[in-house]
Length: 135
Image (cartoon, helix red, strand yellow):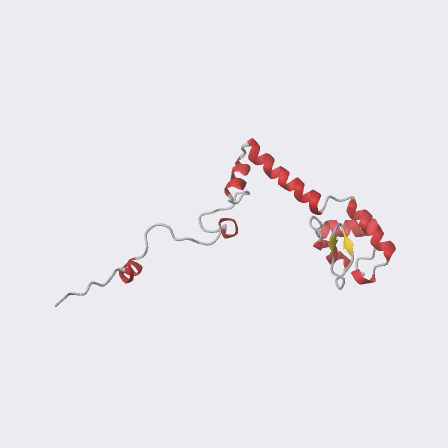
């Protein structure tokens, strides 16, 4: 498996899709990197020569990816929390940041549903202990 930017990329896929396994490289960045490195878009990763891999590595090094990008994102979130912005508070509470509704959705951020408050009458009726009369 070829290794680019500290990441193993799959051999049996086209290089355009293999590059997307690197954090920070999406469809647009992948196309730009391949154009800059002068590598054929339709070529499979296993068919790349050493020279092409070196050019790809050099082109990827010019883009902020993996650890540097993750670090920058975390610093941005920490800055928002520190200045006390609305978005920072939402990040700190683990709620959606970009204006989505939370009354019914946002399960990914809020976690599994938990029933709070009153239960239905049928549920209460089945949970009541049965008292037997003594004769």
